[in-house]
Length: 354
Ligand code: NAD
Ligand code: DAU
Image (cartoon, rainbow, N blue to C red; front, side):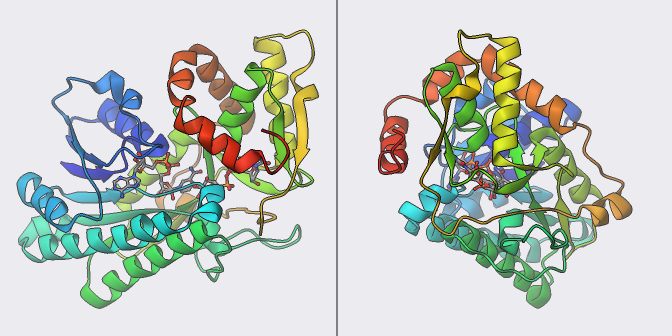
């Protein structure tokens, strides 16, 4: 079996669902259910004996050691993290605790567990760190896309905390020989994404007739990848990569934010027509402090060495995503009450769009 952390979040839950659809190998899913974790994402595997959910913290040494002893996983995949850049700007402490210290704690537990394995079990074990392209910093319009050899230059507290974790993973391989793998992926979108991130926020605000907040001039560029493709990339790395390796995962889909927002509005106009075009809701608001201008991934290494490439293009992925949110309004309502409203006020009121 494998141990997945953060498997009730956006990418983690998509990963667990994809994994269980593809194979019989069980998953232990460790997640402490922060505001971003949601067991409803896993409704379709409720009662499935191959999915063992444990509510707990990756930063709890006894719990992690006990789970490793009890379940003897062949791999640990660390998805658990604080992940929203804007939250890291308003309150970085939790990012340091979970992303840095939590990863350190998992590494320590994995090192002890792996050290106690023998033979084939020890040889097969992997620790896979799910990381981000934000560790590489920001590109100008002319610069080449991020490669695995690009120097780290994180700019937000979130990116810095992920970079620190990646460095610890690297050090555990280099120093102790722990068989680690690291993936650095671009912006994901798709089902079950918490609506603090751009794409679900646009869909949900548009459907509610609320302003669609675009930071700054809307020209910041991201490289968008449908979440299923990220999950298949991680599975490929887990199965085929050599210990110590790093792979960038991306969608070859660079778009500026305004293009993304306009695409979503056009799909909504078609699938759920309203009296006025949804794009009329676009509202330019105060920029994110230190807002990275451009991210772009060179995914050549994973394509050449492991034969992975995305199955979904941007237009298809956007359509699927909008359709999913239209078909799952109950899910959206369940995550946009209470605490969510407090966040919307904290992040947008001062920007003039709450
Ligand atoms: P998310 O915020 O949707 O989910 C994070 C999950 O981790 C939640 O279920 C939360 O409850 C859990 N968690 C948080 N702190 C925890 C702790 N201390 N102990 C146990 N569980 C904890 O995040 P996501 O977008 O699914 O991202 C998953 C991973 O992928 C992260 O490591 C992120 O850095 C990375 N990543 C995300 C993107 C993206 O575009 N979303 C892109 C590249 C990499
Ligand atoms: O690049 C990978 C990263 O992508 C992940 O590591 C992060 O976990 C994930 O959150 C994401 O980070 P971004 O900051 O790029 O994602 P976000 O959806 O917050 O913003 C995408 C772009 O849209 C960014 O340029 C900021 C802009 N934006 C965002 C929000 C929430 C707006 O213009 N308006 C908004 O209201």
